[in-house]
Image (cartoon, rainbow, N blue to C red; front, top):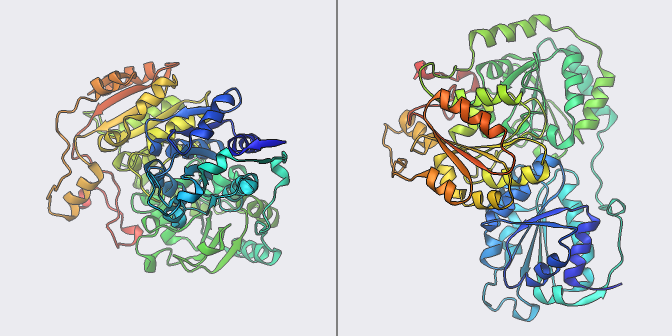
Length: 560
């Protein structure tokens, strides 16, 4: 059938099963927005308060559902406002498709009003990007973009469409999304590599499993649990791996790395086999790479060959999908008993617990442990970036996959509230909570209007210490308490701001006030709620490994 380019965009989105897009209109993308008006019964458009909010919402939607998230923006500043969200998705392997529109083909390259080479700008932070100048290739380009975004190691793809293409017409034929395949196939692990690793597991006396976001992406949580229990191995995780292995399981030891638990860091330092699955060995995980897992044979399992031996040298590796590989390893390993090693790890955990909440006053660990108990570790918890993010990773016991939504690789302040909107849109029946520092909240609080307009009962918990907490912690420990531009105590009233945007809001200063307010918030049905929780500006995240130190030298407050 003969369709305009803007209609082809809508039909291709429907082909891909897209039910929601997040965006903000503008001049060059008007043809697509005019078509969205006509398709409003099929495709839900969420108008965010800023384009960056749209990219973060698409990201949160994708992480929490496993589907491809979609965001849209106009040319020039609209497109560049997506860039931080695209980079965030790229660093954490999140499948999103960003659709932008540009000036007409004759005006490209002439410094036209609101013209920008967004394909050039985003080349380093996308799996691939396209600029479409011919309506005849539009449908195939969109299909290819979705396939690239979700195939193999997921990631963002950008499609920039000139405005004249959205107005031009050509023949369109519907295609089943499942029938469109990329020429490059996902790597399948070879049997020889599987056999080698299975043999290494069978010889191990002190195994340790370290899991990252690849387990959540591949949907391999059940297989991971089966493997860990079969080989009787403790399990630790990265921030992106939260929920892949239940934080309430007896074999779970906590997060690894700079702000990991002493027990996870001890386990990796003393194990004889480290089975690392779906991880990229970030510097925040490894500490001093020369002293990382010094006693262990290291096995790296990942779908992306580029990650193998990039940061840590391995003794063996398997390239392929984690779910498939773990299944095959389970089949090739016998039931094992490492009770002596497991008991050693458990005793270490008893002797070196995570620091408890303050007994006398409200602090973030108390807030997170209370939330964990009240939600049974099953809420979708989004975070901004900073101390509150690290406290969340340490004190909230995630029991299900795809329930921590956080910017791990790029560390994007201002990410969480937009992501929470996307997560709530994709999971209407689940409790969605965003944990924010007051510094981060200042960056994206405008998205409260988006949540209020769409009647989304997101719980926004602001950990309000009137400082940039994580930077202040470093300034205290490593910069002689020279607090350069980290004090935020300027009298801003978050309660009035939140209420002015259509949200409910409460100031929280005590544990008792928090307990009462969170119970009310968890029962809210259609309005976002902000809980402005006042804590001490010098509260710190413990334990901590100093930059450049080995991870077994993670210290608590009394050690500094």
